[in-house]
Length: 199
Ligand code: ADP
Ligand code: MG
Ligand code: MG
Image: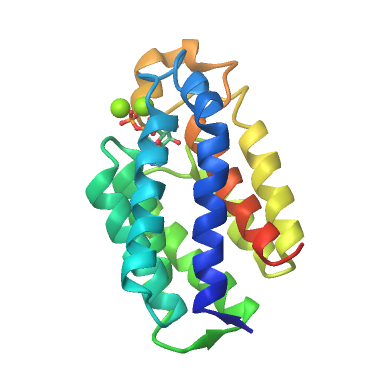
């Protein structure tokens, strides 16, 4: 079973990964965006870990809803509300149990990912974070490692796609040939989850 401490450790691992990969995320956001994705998420996850330390929420659901609120209020741009919604809605779907199962998390994450799709009006294939998140949420029903692989493959598979949502879509065909920064950061988030689970 997964408790509040597991979810805190996931958010800390996500912060570390985003910190380490911030330059790469910003580089991916240069040719098809405005070169701020790494710094946006670095600021956001620093706020997440600080808030978690201060408030020490007692349940998995409360950890993720607090994290989501922090991302919404500190990350500018498209990815703040989208990632904030992902974590808030996943947290809400987990309810107020002290411990949740892997299957509960898989179900809740699917709810969170659906909320991202509704908010952003995007679908898989549009070259966004959903290209990593949708296959990851589906594969999480199988295992943490399967989710990590699905997210990484989904992110890589955005390279040949033409963007249909977000800033990159303004470039039309010129968005082809670059990995989507949001899909890359989603793969980091899911990889941090798998690492936290020891997978
Ligand atoms: P901004 O584009 O406002 O500078 P970021 O650079 O932080 O924001 O995030 C860009 C990422 O957000 C994109 O790479 C993409 O994955 C994601 N994104 C943008 N618009 C949408 C959308 N409508 N639906 C899903 N994801 C989106
Ligand atoms: Mg950007
Ligand atoms: Mg921006």
